[in-house]
Amino acid sequence: MLIFIENTPRVYAWGSTDAIPELLGRAPTGEPQAELWLGTHPAAPAQLAKASARPRTLLDLVAGDPERYGVDGGPLPFLLKVLGIGAPLSLQVHPDRAQAAAGFAAEEAAGIPRDAPERNYGDANHKPELLVALSEVTALSGFRPLPEVREDLRRLAEAARVSGDGAGAAELVAVAARLAGEDAEAVRRAFLDWAFGDDHAVGLALAALARIATGAEPAGAGPPEDAAPSDRLAALAALVAAHPGDPGILVALLLHHVRLAPGEAVFLRARQLHAYLGGIAVEVMASSDNVLRAGLTRKHVDIAELCRIVDAGDLVEPRLPAERLGPGLVAWRPDVPDFQLLRARLCDPEREDPAPRAAHGAAEAAAEVELAAEHPVVLVVSEGRVRVERVGGDATGLAEVATARRGQSLYVSAGEPIRLSGHGDVFLATVGDGYAGASGDEYTEPRAEPRDP
Image (cartoon, rainbow, N blue to C red; front, top):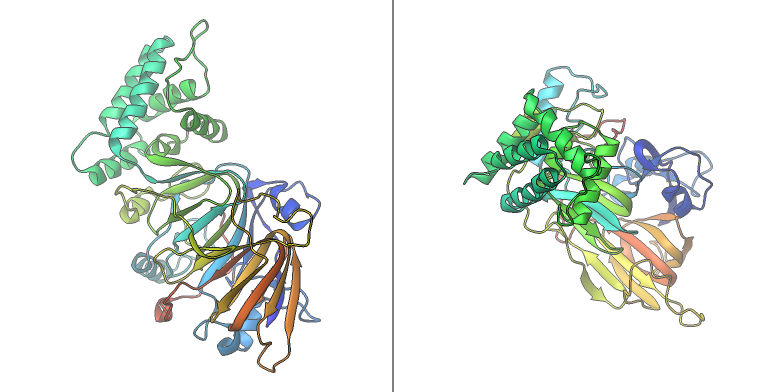
């Protein structure tokens, strides 16, 4: 079946006031709308938009006939989101499957309410995630090599010295010294413990960093041109403005600063420290809401638990390139079974403008794209107007056709392939290649209230 779905955007402090409303063709409410959830996660399941006279959710549909509408007799193992990032998110990690199962069981045994602010684990599932940029997106994604961090701190210290801030320069040199050692993972864990501890030096280092990042040098002195790479310095200035005095600003120095052009992607495995800073994106992840935070937030921070589960090793490359599957069709296929994300770019050859608006650069477009739907698919149209047709019709042999405009979403039940045509871009989430019930008995119903990441 082809079923229109919709949802109410989640309102979080870091959201954009206009990005998601503009995509959906709605007037802004003035609230920071951060995430649009399109899946069966019980915290915010998508609503069936046109299929029922009474309100029903996609989770209700699956529960009523799990073999027909679910995956392996259960809810979807993936969650598709649209993100409108108006301000930096918290620095955060998500647990792997074993850590989530153990953490969830421990908090259940301890009797911690699932909606308690100090709760770390709302379910027993892992949460790897893939993000594809719709606009330019900036992010902090995984640990970078320590020599690069020390070099940036050397530049920042020199900027402080030249500006007349000798004390600040000394503090930043001392921070760099903390990042020396042969065991990089041990060095990073020790740095996290120090940054979020009660050492007075943390505040002094943060103040020095803030003076450089915001250009607040003593009168008459100017920063040197090589103080630090300009994009990283701009990111630090944004973090200082949003979260003054937060130790997460120091931790941000340890991470890759990634600037994604539209159509580029980052993939983050469970346990990798990250934060999205700004932009509009489509995101797909394992269906979980587990978040452990490490600063840049007013929410609960559990540094001891975060340090226990974080992957403190180098992330060589946070970007994940797309794989071309055919004319107009690409896919991002990380090596996790829960999900993959595809993008079809369509053009109508009879139109005077034969290519859609260049929301994704010079990506190839096709008049028609056909793809398998052996498992359920959730799709969202990000540009233009797209016709979706079930090849061969549904189980009764009747033809199924739906036309979705920009901002509209569809759930496609498992069955015959689907054919896409029209003029625009559409993102489609489904299970990963070779999926064989990977969540299985390890999947535990997530909490019923979403948490602000």
